[in-house]
Image (cartoon, rainbow, N blue to C red; front, top):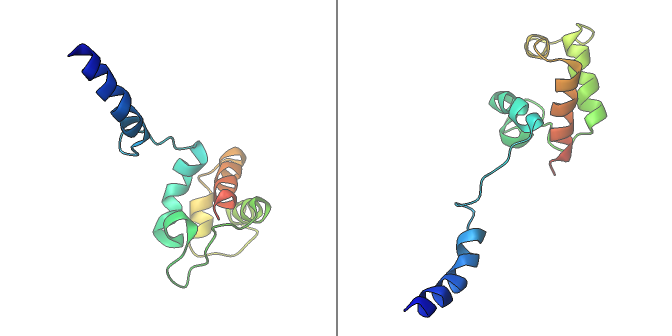
Length: 102
Protein backbone atom coordinates (compact mmCIF):
# COMPACT_ATOMS: atom_id res chain seq x y z
CA UNK A 1 0.00 0.00 0.00
CA UNK A 2 2.81 2.40 0.92
CA UNK A 3 4.59 1.77 -2.39
CA UNK A 4 1.42 2.56 -4.36
CA UNK A 5 0.98 5.83 -2.44
CA UNK A 6 4.58 6.83 -3.15
CA UNK A 7 4.22 5.95 -6.83
CA UNK A 8 0.92 7.84 -7.05
CA UNK A 9 2.44 10.85 -5.27
CA UNK A 10 5.38 10.86 -7.66
CA UNK A 11 2.97 10.95 -10.60
CA UNK A 12 0.72 13.76 -9.35
CA UNK A 13 3.32 15.91 -7.56
CA UNK A 14 4.55 17.66 -10.74
CA UNK A 15 0.97 18.60 -11.60
CA UNK A 16 0.34 20.05 -8.16
CA UNK A 17 3.58 22.05 -8.19
CA UNK A 18 3.05 23.20 -11.77
CA UNK A 19 -0.52 24.31 -11.13
CA UNK A 20 -0.68 28.13 -11.23
CA UNK A 21 -3.31 28.12 -8.50
CA UNK A 22 -0.83 26.63 -6.04
CA UNK A 23 2.03 28.98 -6.96
CA UNK A 24 2.40 32.31 -5.22
CA UNK A 25 2.58 35.36 -7.45
CA UNK A 26 5.40 37.68 -6.50
CA UNK A 27 4.74 41.33 -7.23
CA UNK A 28 7.65 43.69 -7.57
CA UNK A 29 7.54 47.04 -5.81
CA UNK A 30 7.19 48.71 -9.22
CA UNK A 31 4.18 46.53 -10.05
CA UNK A 32 2.53 47.39 -6.74
CA UNK A 33 3.15 51.11 -7.19
CA UNK A 34 1.80 50.99 -10.73
CA UNK A 35 -1.56 49.52 -9.68
CA UNK A 36 -3.03 52.99 -9.22
CA UNK A 37 -2.19 53.82 -12.85
CA UNK A 38 -4.65 51.19 -14.11
CA UNK A 39 -7.69 53.31 -13.26
CA UNK A 40 -6.87 55.71 -16.10
CA UNK A 41 -4.20 54.02 -18.23
CA UNK A 42 -5.81 50.56 -18.22
CA UNK A 43 -4.69 47.20 -16.94
CA UNK A 44 -0.93 46.84 -17.42
CA UNK A 45 -0.87 50.29 -19.02
CA UNK A 46 -3.05 49.34 -22.01
CA UNK A 47 -5.53 52.20 -22.17
CA UNK A 48 -9.03 51.32 -23.34
CA UNK A 49 -9.81 54.89 -24.37
CA UNK A 50 -8.48 58.37 -24.98
CA UNK A 51 -5.88 58.35 -22.19
CA UNK A 52 -2.47 57.30 -23.56
CA UNK A 53 -1.24 53.74 -23.14
CA UNK A 54 2.03 53.54 -21.26
CA UNK A 55 2.68 49.83 -21.68
CA UNK A 56 6.04 49.23 -23.33
CA UNK A 57 7.11 52.89 -23.43
CA UNK A 58 10.76 53.39 -22.53
CA UNK A 59 11.56 53.77 -18.84
CA UNK A 60 13.36 57.03 -19.67
CA UNK A 61 10.23 58.48 -21.29
CA UNK A 62 7.94 57.43 -18.44
CA UNK A 63 10.30 58.58 -15.67
CA UNK A 64 10.98 61.93 -17.36
CA UNK A 65 7.25 62.50 -17.90
CA UNK A 66 6.38 61.68 -14.29
CA UNK A 67 9.14 63.93 -12.95
CA UNK A 68 8.01 66.78 -15.21
CA UNK A 69 4.40 66.32 -14.04
CA UNK A 70 5.50 66.17 -10.40
CA UNK A 71 7.69 69.26 -10.64
CA UNK A 72 5.05 71.29 -12.51
CA UNK A 73 7.18 71.52 -15.67
CA UNK A 74 4.60 69.68 -17.77
CA UNK A 75 0.98 70.84 -17.84
CA UNK A 76 -1.64 68.39 -16.65
CA UNK A 77 -5.05 68.12 -15.12
CA UNK A 78 -4.56 65.02 -12.97
CA UNK A 79 -1.05 63.65 -13.49
CA UNK A 80 0.68 66.44 -11.56
CA UNK A 81 -1.35 65.57 -8.47
CA UNK A 82 -0.64 61.85 -8.83
CA UNK A 83 3.08 62.28 -9.48
CA UNK A 84 3.59 64.55 -6.44
CA UNK A 85 3.21 61.49 -4.23
CA UNK A 86 6.19 59.62 -5.66
CA UNK A 87 9.90 59.87 -4.88
CA UNK A 88 12.51 59.68 -7.64
CA UNK A 89 13.14 56.02 -6.71
CA UNK A 90 9.44 55.14 -6.86
CA UNK A 91 9.08 56.91 -10.21
CA UNK A 92 11.95 54.85 -11.60
CA UNK A 93 10.39 51.61 -10.28
CA UNK A 94 7.08 52.48 -11.96
CA UNK A 95 8.83 53.43 -15.20
CA UNK A 96 10.84 50.20 -15.22
CA UNK A 97 7.70 48.17 -14.61
CA UNK A 98 5.76 49.63 -17.54
CA UNK A 99 8.82 49.50 -19.80
CA UNK A 100 9.15 45.77 -19.08
CA UNK A 101 5.61 45.03 -20.31
CA UNK A 102 5.26 44.07 -23.96
